[in-house]
Image 1 (cartoon, rainbow, N blue to C red):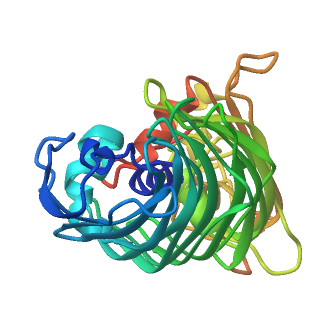
Image 2: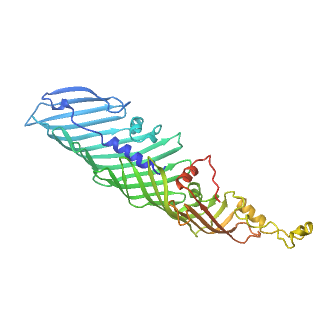
Image 3: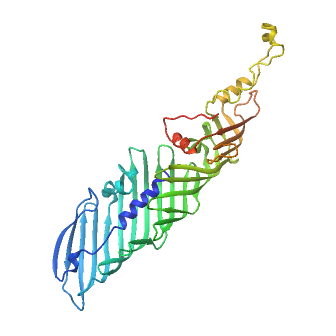
Length: 415
């Protein structure tokens, strides 16, 4: 899900910065009205019908008005040309685009993961610029208010989307870039795994089609997440970000990051590197998560038989074994064994006093890709166990474990 927003950004920018050139009919020395259809550049795209009203040259210039209409698209364009040239100026008098009518066409080309998604809202376009030899350049403003994006089959949705951006482009040089911070906000995000709100992203796109993220934040799991400044190539998109967690609910992190917990409640801070590309998918990088002490933390281990009792006797042998039944009669029960057994099988809740999760996907000096360290006591009073020091090592690629933990059908255990 964290990668869906850059893909959405690519789709919306493609919607707003379409390939443009002045239709040949504008350049003919005629006055009157004409109409026709543009040939579709994308399979399945709605037909674009245009109408042109051109005035006779006057004072060395000729004025033209052009409209383009299609299901979910409306554009009114004013053009002023030299009486005998293809140089002049253009201005968008009004422009509206409904992404929901076009996403089915654009998604297969730009973001296959959005195939089957639905969108709501209207994209407003405005702008002006110059024409040189019939090719436009200038400024374009994009604004999408109260939008929504939903994928029922994948069970996620984004509501309350606002996108604003100002761009400069040149059709001859085939370049475009933002002239002020591009701003994207989402009020609520819902997925099968978690919910979030108040996502905010701002940054600028340069002429190399590289987005420089300046400020990124989101509220989730009762805390907030921020992303350090980053760069994101848009073609193709490759993401590498450093994510910081503040007072995040441990239960949500335990569902996504290998911790060895079946259940967890509490708050953590942390920092994790996250990478994504189409070829490699999601990759967890180096980082850590640590326990906050401003509210109680309660955990229950994923069942791991022998984790705590493997080297502990169930009874204490006071007499030599060769005495047979007599030795067993005088072998008192280890009072801690049953309690430790209940802990390692996930039947007893623990109140954690310290917790640290280290992620080392490249492997530490012992080849571990992750390590969990915890000191805790049974939450229920009266047990024979006073304190448990829990250490769990994870070996192997974290990316595979991350993908498994995202699958509701999969249960992981750690030893």
